[in-house]
Length: 400
Ligand code: GLY
Image 1 (cartoon, rainbow, N blue to C red):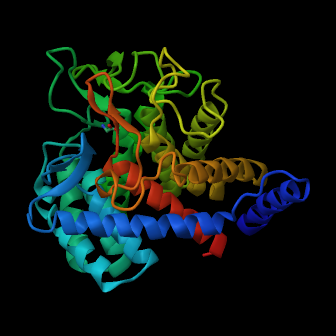
Image 2: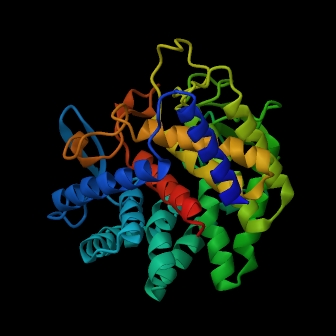
């Protein structure tokens, strides 16, 4: 069915051409060129950070490289990006760098102070294991899952996100981003046969579905739970415009998270949730025609607000996967949107010239605008999910 849908999309493009409208390059060509450029940038980045065996790229601002150590929540994205690029082009140089940068975060498998272990370990060691079947990688993933599971409180039914309480405002904060960490646990359940990881993920996904979402299927960023009753006592934002607004990346994490939850459980409630979130995003009156969202869909200065390439990349990757689980009409809609996003992100509007942008691929992401941090800069997760989306679309086109 996927190939029929892609042929339909192609036929519409050809019709537009024969009617005298502007000719679009075949998407396959756009993707191949984007992946070639991504490889050049990533190799340049890998070389730049090669000398310090504890450093990982984080961003680039004011003409300066900004690195991080392995504890930063984004440490796994650059290693993961290298694995995708190695999958696309199995060069020894890419493999060596992928192994090297992945090894730099191995110690995080023991970190019980963060919920971000899914991001950190599954993007890096998860991709390494997927491509190499190296059991040493699997051991890191399983230890990481055990560490993450220590943050689950059965009385509340959720994994705790942050240890801080925001100056006493929160008792047990859980952020929508945390849905992204479940993939590590689902994987651990499958590989170890230990059902507890699966049950934790299902409980977290269920309770998040119950408490994080508004009737229109937009989501709050932070929900804090009363540690005695297990009920929410605060619903707020941290990185969005307002408590009641739709922070774009939060919506993207929710969409991606419930798509994964459906893939891993085949529970149609999660599929419905992912479709509802997609519906909210794609029909939002403030969603631009190119589907690169403003950093917050309710930011007050739209259309003068910044766009967030990272949210677009996450939505794009999630929609490509979700298109495989829905009927033909919806799949066509999702893939049309994803293609538009890819074409826009791959254009000079968002893609930097080789060697520019601190060797990041994409420009114009927004990390934490209210905190004045990482505003309109390149970010590792924008590049990671963009390349993941390119690879997913490429595999769809190839029918693999
Ligand atoms: N906390 C992860 C993010 O900024 O999306």
